[in-house]
Image (cartoon, rainbow, N blue to C red; front, side, top):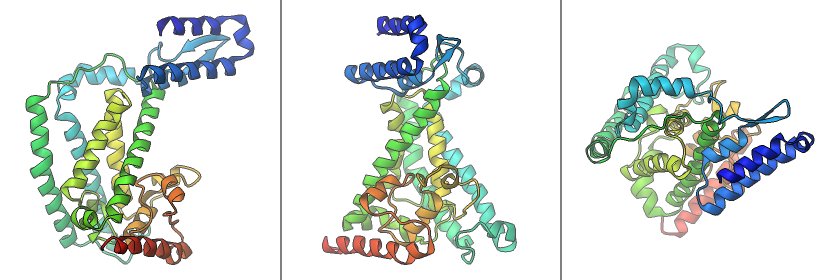
Length: 344
């Protein structure tokens, strides 16, 4: 591998390469991908290294060989918080604290919305009020799941799992961003399959997923208003996917935070100008509006984040008035019919 990289760098420095930089760059990327796949060690770090190549005055300069953009921040974290970051408890605490902070902010908005028109105008259902009873009900189950399942699992990791060694090098910016994207794409596919299966099979739906659909107009605390099995599935994928892609630990932690953020946003009940579905172009991101439709029409919009799987499967329902009344109802009827045929 090292010899091939040296040959690629030498070829980049040759005069001939200066007339065909794009082709050489693409060739190098293809070489990296081919080698990674053939050796069975495909990782986001290698993909990020290939995509981080830049050209300066006709000379090949690899961004990964220079000081990564994230290196100063990573050095600070390692030097000042290494013991905390190495603890097996850290990912759990990071995920839980992120979730609690987000739902606290959204819950404050829910309580202020009835008397603050500036907040209420962003609500998807402005006539719906989040009550203290609903807040208490969701908090009880969330607390129960955390105390009975998450906390014991975290303590078990702390007792039996060794401290995680921290790499000296930070990930390149490309590896960091592509790692988060890759984990999000994989998680989206995993949950889509899980979600469809638990809607199509009556026993799975009634046993494990129906509890989440008790709220047809969700608010932020509904995000983790889940059965233990669903919470375990989501937590497993969030933990394992960065490992499968051989991501840097910093990338894995960032993916955890991002996953919690967009999941809470999907259930928050607000269509803010900075919502993800407004930031991602071409309608590729489903977001809060489509997931809100899923709670109204459970046979539609199964994917948690992206829209492509629902479009391919014919279960997509766009957030427009006509589609809400026509296509969404039609897809929902078909889904319920299939579930009824299986003994619903």
